[in-house]
Amino acid sequence: MKKFCILAAGKGTRNRSIDGLHKALLPLENIPVISHIINKLHNDTEIVIALGYKAEQIESYLMVTHPYRKFTFVKVDNYDGPGAGPGHSLLCCKSYLQEPFVVSPADTLIDQDINIMDVGENWLGVGEVSVGNSIKYCLAKGSKYLDALYYGTGTQVYVGVAGIYDYKSYWKALEEHTIIKDEYQVIHGFDGLERIKLINFAWYDTGNSESYSETRKIYNNDIVANKNNEALFIDHGKVVKYFSDSKKIDDRISRTSHLNENCPLVNKVNSNMYYYDYVDGKLLSEITDENVMLQFLQNCHENLFIKQRKDSEFRKNCVSMYEKKTRERIKPLIGSDLDNLTKINGINVKPVSEMLDLVCWKLIYWQAKPSLFHGDLQPENVLYDSKNNKFVLIDWRDKFGESLIVGDAHYDLGKLYHNLMIDGQSMLKDLFGYSINNTEASITFHVKSNLMYFTDMLEKFCDDNGYVWRTIKLIGILQYLNTCTLYDDFKDGEYGKFLFLYGKYSLSKFLNAYGVLHE
Image 1 (cartoon, one colour):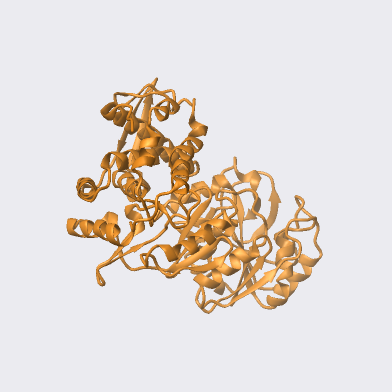
Image 2: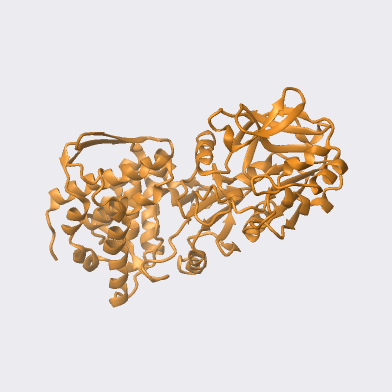
C-alpha cells in the first residue's frame, strides 16, 4: 500500500478546545494532531486528505510545514448536511484511491510496532476502551479476524484506522450505504470484504474535549503553553502562530516593521496564521551568564525602547492596557470562592476588586515611558544566538491599546519581571501548586536561580537608566491577574487559579509595603 487517506472534512463539534482551530490542527507537544499522523508515514507515501470545514486552514498549514510531501487535497461537497459523514468524505476520494490504501480519521493517533502500509490483507485497527466509555464508539467482535461491528457496550473498539486491500469490493459496498446515527459511515464498506484481520493498537482519541485532555497527559512535553484562542506550533523547521482573531495576525505582521529588526522575517499562512523559520538559539530563561542578561537589557534600552511622543492617545492606551484590561479579565473571578479567601501564605488579602481600587492608576500613566515595544517581553520570548552574539525577539504583542507603534517601556519591563518570577518552563513542568483550608490558601512555586539573580540585575538596570522599578514591579503583579483567566483549559484550569492567588498575594504585599500611592 502506497496511499494513506486522512478524513478531515468534518466540523469536529465535540472538541472546541481552541476557538476556531480545526480539530486536525489541535496541538500535542506544539505539533498538530495531523502532523503527528503524517510523521509516522514513510516519505514516499502518497497522502490523500479529504477537506471540507476550514479546508484552507489545513491545506495552507501542511503546504508550509510539509513542503516535500506528496499531498492530494480533495474538497468534500457535503461535510455537515444530511448524508454527510466520514463515509461520504471517503467516497469523495474514490478516484484517487484505486489501489490498496489505509484510511484514518484526523483525530486518532496510534502507536504501531508494524508497518501498517505493508500488511498485505484487509485489516481493522482495534483498541481497548472502558465499558463506561464504549457507548461513544463503534465496537468490534472478534479475536484474530473481525466477526462483527456493532454499537452498544464492550471493551474492544474500532479506532477508525483500517487497511483496505480489496479496494474494489470495498468501494462497491460503500456505495450501497445506509445512514447510521445520522451519518454516512466508513464501516459500510467493510460489508463487502470477506475477511478482515484485527490489529491491536495503543490509541489516543483527540476527537472530543475530554479525550483530547487525556491525550495531552500522554503527549505532555509542551514547549509553549497554548491558550483558549491561540496556539503555537513548532513543526519541521517552521514556527507557526495561530490566533482565532484574524486581525491579530495582520497587526502582528505589520508590527514587525516597528520592532527595529529585532524579530525574524514573518510570512502569512492564512487569515489566522503566520510563520517564520525556526531560530536556532537559547532561551533567555536558560541563560546563566549574567553578562548576557545585562547585554540583553542594554540592547532593549538602545534598540527597542526608542523614545516616542507622549500624547493623549498614549494615555488612553495606557488606561486600556492597565486598569480596563485588568478589571475586564478578572470579572469571572470576582466574588468567587477563590476571591473570598482571607489569607494567602499568612498574608491578609481583600477581594480583588477592593485591592484594585487601592492602586493609583494615574501614577502608572504619569510615569509611563512611550517607546517602541515588544508587548510580551518574557524570557521565553527572547532567543540568544551566541554564534552571532544577537538577540531575537519572538511572539510580540499585536498592539498596545490601539497603537501598533507606541507602547510603554514599563509594560515590557513589567512583563519581564512577571516571568522572571513565574517562568513558563517551570510552569509546564508543574512546578507550582496551591492548597486551600477553609478561608486560607497556601501557594508554592519553583524559581530558577538564574532568573532570581536576573531580577536583582533588572532592578539595578531600571534604577540606573531612569525606569521606575516600583511601577514596573506593580505592572508585573497586575499581569498575574489579567492573564489568569486565559488558562481555563490548561492544566485543567489549575494554573489559572494559581496565578489568581499569587496575583492577589503579591498585590496585597505591594500595597502593604507602599500604601495607597498618590501622584
